[in-house]
Each structure stands twice: as structure tokens, then as C-alpha cells.
Length: 410
Image 1: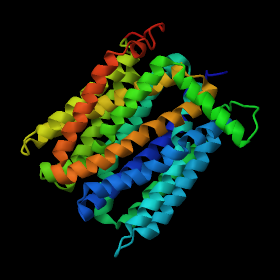
Image 2: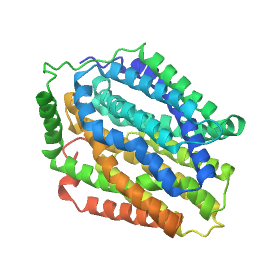
Image 3: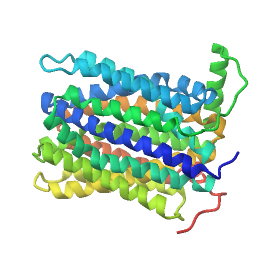
């Protein structure tokens, strides 16, 4: 497959995705501020996250089967359009006056259906366009785009929520989706054609093939397992940064923005390291180490004195860098280990497998945060990530991943 002109194609994709990521980051932060200040409840934040994740977890594996059959470019376009339509509906729900949280949860669940198709399709196009020796760099650039959006997004979101009602702020997300769709119209993405029927039996057979692709690679399935367990701790903490800032460090909107921005700066640094340099360290080592580093930042953040907000901000930046390197390394390992015509299924299965245990973590963390304190939730989550990182290094099949591949040098 011709991959010489992949840079030009990806520049169009990156341009559209960056605007979409930026506006989504702004809107997501504005909604978190609104929920945090309006209700001051970890459980409500947890229920919001569950509504946004559960449908994706349930339909994700089946979505992956169709992503591998359909044109992935069209999948991304229609998924973006559907998510934008759901956001448009939410502008009518989040009006001044009585807020019906049930409707908010329902629309967030519908957006999750679109994400079940969009996220795996986005990850699955890289091996169709990019030479294998450049996959980690592309993943690094993807992380950089996410990082910049997380730096600028909160500032934009804070400004927007201070200037407009929450339902008006949502239009930013719609504009971003339109621009992302437009950028995809100007690129050509190869389509891996499959000659299969659309019967339910064939869908189940295709799904089983995706499971086998994971199961038969012992190191890969162990990496999946440990990453799934880590999300039990990471996901709840991710939604409770604003509450730790407010409750423990006695911050307000400004401090919440600072934490979001430094997390984004950390992610930008991590993505920059991977995209600028050819890293000699094996990717599986980076995955395991970043689990431990992330866990360390969570534990220390939870035990810090309330007057050490600056130290908390530094730790948050370090955690952002760890998350960026982990994500890029993890996704690249999958892209290298799995055949291109199976990637849609495998990514969908992973996203679903990772989400389901994280929902359990969200339920427990919401309860722990409201009854024992947000800081204790951070400590428990951090210890879990540290233990998973240690266990990963002690698992021979996982550590064997990529040993037979030549390593890049700085």
C-alpha cells in the first residue's frame, strides 16, 4: 500500500481534529465547572461519566466489527455529525431554570454511541497511511494535539462559561465537529475491503476473530488486562481533579483552570518527546513505567497539605506527561501487533473492556469521595496504579512484547 504521501493527508486530518479537540476540551471543561459549582457532588460527576461511557462499552465491540467492514473515513464523518447533533439537542436541555439531570445523562449516553464508532476508527486509520517506523511519532503528535487542546481548552471554556450561559457554550463543540468533518472531505483514506455477509452470525464470527487476535497474543492480552485494571483508578481520578482543587486545596474557577492547563502542558511535553526524538526505550517498558509514575503523582497529591497547591500543580503536570507517553506507547504497540484489517475490532474491544471496570471504579470512587474525602480517593487510585506497574514488570509474556523488533535510537 502506498504510504509516501501520508504526511500531507495527516496534516489535513490533524488540522480538523485539533479544532474539534480544542472546542471539545473547552466545552467539557465548561460543563465540569458548571456541574461542580452547581451540585458540588462527586456522585453526580461520576454518574455523568458513567452515562458518557456505558453505551460505548456495550456497543463498542459490535461497532468495531462494522468499522473494519465500512469505509473508516465515512465512519468518522457520520460519527462526528451524530455527536454534534446530540450536542445541539443538549443546548435545549441546559437552559436556565430547572435542570433535568436525567435528560442530560440521556444525551451524554447518545453522544457515547457516536464515540464508540469515532475513536476506534480514528486509531485504526494510522497503519493504513503511515509507515510502521513512524507510528510512534504519529502517536506522539496525536498526544501533542490533545495536549495543546487541554492547555488552551480550559482557558477558552472558563472564558466562555463566564460570558455565556452553559447551553450557548455548547455551540463551540458543534462548530468544531463541522470543521473536523470538512477536513476529512479533502483527504483519501484507503479502505480495507472485506468480502463478508452482514448476517448476525457473521458479525459474531468477526467479533470472535477480534477476541482471538487479543487472546492468542499472550503478551498483548496481559497488557490489556493490566491497562483495564488501571482504568479502575485512573478514570475516577480524572473526573475528580476539580473537586480536589475545590475541596482540598480551597481553589475556585481560576485554580481549576490552572490544573487543567498544567495537565495539558505535561501531555504536550510527553507527546513532544515522542514526536521529536526516536526513543531507544522499549514501548512496553514505557507503558509499565508510566503506570507507576501516574500512580505516584496521585498518591502524593492525595497526601499533600492544603497549602501546597503549587506542588499539586507540578505533580499534575508530571501526571499529564506520564499519561501522554503511556497512551502513545500503548496505541502504537496495538498498531504494530495487530493486522490492519482487525484494528477496528481490537481497538473497540479494548475501549469497551477498559470502560466496564472503570465504571465500577467511578461508582466506588464517588461514594468514597463523598463519604471519606476526595483526597483518599486519589490515594487509593494511586496505590492501585503503582501495584499494576510493578506487576507488569514481573509478567514475562508482557515484557516479551517487541523484543524481536529493532529499537529506534535518539
